[in-house]
Length: 196
Image 1 (tube, rainbow, N blue to C red):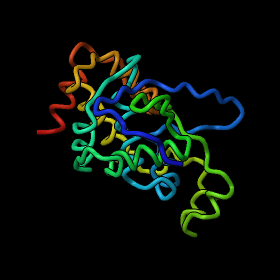
Image 2 (image 1 turned 90 degrees about the vertical axis):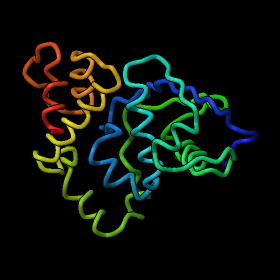
Image 3 (image 1 turned 30 degrees about the horizontal axis):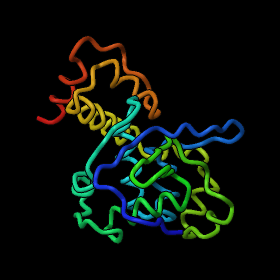
Image 4 (image 1 turned 135 degrees about the vertical axis):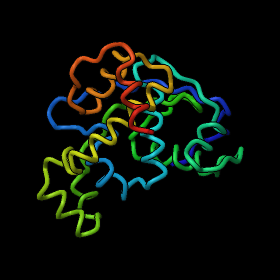
């Protein structure tokens, strides 16, 4: 269902705390989302959700210009309702994986629910097998891949100005085991060493 009227150039992103107790939900950066939600939403929508989740972090609100957001995702930018960014936002909203309270005020959850039975049946056969036989999808990738992503996330957060404690909190929230307690600057030094 389409939204009436233009979306403003300046987007405000806030956290959507979705209450759920009974079933397991999956972090937006989890392998479950990468493998099973991706064919439902499409790659642009998944990357958009993950970028918004990273931007909001632990802040109460983040503002970003739609042109900057679109270009940072490789979507280009046209100031129309039919732009790739606006279509991705609309798709996420229509699938109820983010909320837009008013045009340009976007709520982003930390986690997505499991796919419905109908959505699972519409996946390619190979992914239906994965969904049925791999309940531990958060560990689907190898330890080496997870460590690489952990270093990449640490470096990204450090470049955005996050302190060591904030970086550790974010990594734990995203499902990475807490590292041994780093001293000041240890994460940045480790990340810098990885990029040499």
